[in-house]
Length: 374
Image (cartoon, rainbow, N blue to C red; front, top):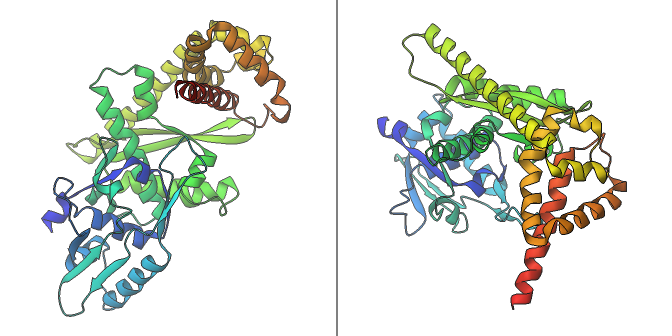
């Protein structure tokens, strides 16, 4: 079993960010099978082999009905389980629905289980070109909630990028975004496949967030905490804080060190927010937004709002200014101002709204330029 605990899972980030339309057992079965793939020498027939001993260890199954329980779980996986994947995040209307494992061969009289992957899922497991996440299969063994698995993978994806770019001299604010990712409630519900359940936030928090954080903190290499980000009374997004556990001399030392890491991460985030806020309030783009009534003086007093403007929106304004000049930017802001009658600042995230407007406009400019070249 030592070999099992040493295995790594490697998956494309598009798959990590996809919606897993399946329960815990099919999801864990898929992860275990993926850990058997050698990405440098992938199976030509898309087939890997598991031992029943590995399966029962991974799922902590010991009772006498384990064979029948697993056969039932495998049948459910093949009939109902699939991934809904958006391969192109710029195109919200495009997605793939893929049944990951269409064939499994199971024999009661020997130890071998044959697992054949769908050919359409294989590019997300072997053709990743740097856009992938790696994690230890041992981190998933004790996770009992499918939300724990989904959020562990998603958080790990961000932390992997943080560690990668930390060595490549990225800006501090960019690194903090990766180490402390923030996700809108809309995106989080899509990721966890809870758009139609746990409608009240308190139910979502109890059944998804709290259970997942408890299991991740207890059984994986990470300690994760979160804060609710509100716009008025509405919980608009969740701010996560990720720290990696260190080898401890004793349990008390470990707990103290983890608390210190959390406080350090939170303090770094707050300091960076204040820095971004100071840059935003003196920016010429803030002046233009006020002139077009796209933000108010009240917005200017909010550290979170203005920090997000500086981080999420103003880099695109700078890009548009380079493409079309300052008058081109003014024209865009005037247009957005005229079209905002359907938009209510009290109920939505101002920076996110403005970011969607500017990124869509820049994308249309680039498409027009490409058409001219043809």
